[in-house]
Length: 167
Image 1 (spheres, rainbow, N blue to C red):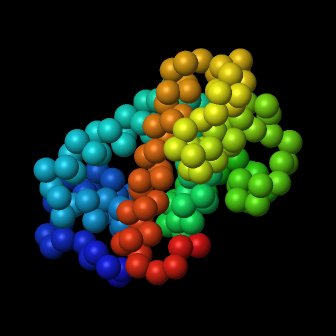
Image 2: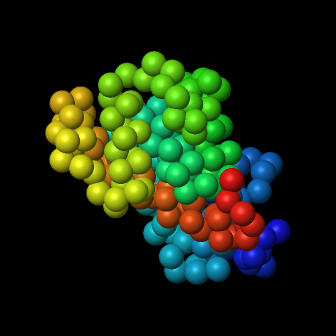
């Protein structure tokens, strides 16, 4: 169950983030304890995940690297599934964690580097940014920062909720 059990009763909004026949994500169950934040967060999360300008494959590469960098087993498992749906192979998903280059495009290499720099330095170096601007639009780059930030935050929440050693 973890350190933060779901509230009883669950707010109705939790159902919006629950897969059919499944359980709500532990991160959403934890946030449900702060009901005034739940609706705005779900709106933001849906906008970022469903309405962003980044291709879904890029979004999931960034989400998976953030989950890996934060050692979040929960976010890693969740986004492995989303990554497969976005066209990532099992081999590519494994390479996101191992750091092995399975033949990433230059854009994908740079997105991974940006995710690593954001995790390590809380910034993207001038060199990486300059190279990214040659392969991505400004709106995509801004979104990429938010994707890494979102899944870093959710990884932290999941790691605390699970209350055990991160993966």
